[in-house]
Length: 144
Image 1 (cartoon, rainbow, N blue to C red):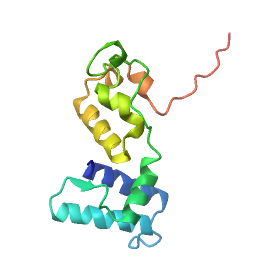
Image 2: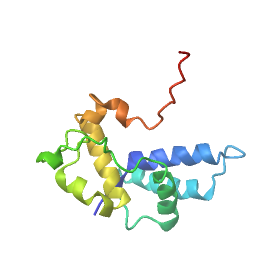
Image 3: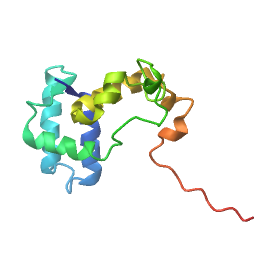
């Protein structure tokens, strides 16, 4: 059973704050309030993860709305697991994570993303970082 890391809750809170800012600096939109309650409990109890299955429905829906804005897979189309490696040199996922990615829950996918990002050893973070960029800017036409 995967947990949703507190940094993902923070990122979702910040996403909602930008999306639906407080009109008076005090009140919060309902999705943001739901996430803030979960976040406050996690801080109070010194928890790093929230169980995805016992998370309140409103908070989970708010988190999933943020999650849907992220790239789904860390794949950069250089898969060394197909060549027999236990861990893909391109994205950093192990063979099971690559194979069962479509069946993984959002929290399981985020846990994998967190691990490979913290490790930072996959080619997506160094050698082929340009392939991993989400905000690819169009190349202006040349004047030739």
